[in-house]
Amino acid sequence: MVAQLDNLYLKTRPLKGLTRLLGYGLFEGRPLTTKGQWINPLVLAQFSLVKRLPQIKKVRAPIFILGTGRSGTTILGVVLSMHEAVGFLNEPKALWFSVNPKDDLIGSYSRAEAQYVLSEQDASPEVRQAAHRLYAYYQSLTGSRRVVDKYPEMIFRVPFVKAIFPDAKFIFLVRNGWDTIESIEHWSERLGVTSGEETHDWWGANNRKWQFMLEQLLPLDPLLSQKAATIATYKRHEDMAAVEWILTMNKGLEVLQTYQSSVYRLHYELLVQQPRQVATTLTEFLELETDPVFLDYAEKVLRPAGAKKPVDLHEAIRAPFREVMDLLGYV
Image (cartoon, rainbow, N blue to C red):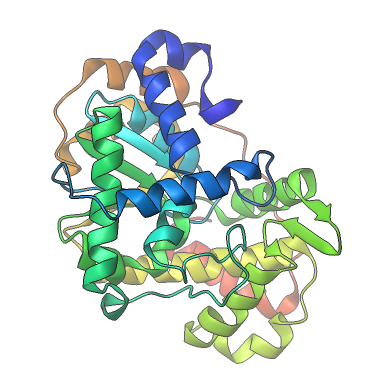
């Protein structure tokens, strides 16, 4: 499915399909595991030109969807994109790589060193200017008044984002850990590819993302830092995915405490069980106007999925996993 477009989406608001195609083709880039990577140099060249031009529109309160990948972040972004004011960028990592060359954890655009954690100090005047100009260019091209940027790893970069966009809003999406683990495992098995001597899957080029996680995130986590040597030996997708989920959820809870007025914690299960009510609440939190078409679409699209069974995690992470599940209210 190109750009997450289906018949219902196109029928509901046909022009929204064009907005999504523009975002997909001109702003998001193509990651390692997908076809069409030939377009990446063209997308980056376009960004290089736009960054040299004057900003043509003011960017107000962009919205970031944070959490662990495979936890419902994409469908949330698609639903929000149906709001008449919103344009949706689905993991625009090409855009952010153009803003900050240390952004590329996966290795889609560069094999240079990357940083999982970015702070206010990384938001130089040049970085802030580049981000504003590229976002403004997207808004002008698509006619969107607000941008929704789904980029789960930004959970580790909220101070960086706030330094660029002080009025940014964040949705911290939470999902049952067992469901997220299984989804990551199946994604990597289904979409992972071999290219020459490299493996490209959920963990990047030859586990590049996983290595950055071990080196940069694990030492900072109160539950997992003492188990780093053991965790570094993991090869199973289930164990690796559990580690990513624990790290991300712990960071999300920390961000929630630090930026209470800017972050909304949303459980995926509630989103799909009560779509109209949740969409209404999000409208208020994000300071969007009431849009009946958006609310109707959310109710049509969002449906509960069956819960996944627990898997046998490595003994070193069983207790931390259960502790985070308990913190989030999952039994």
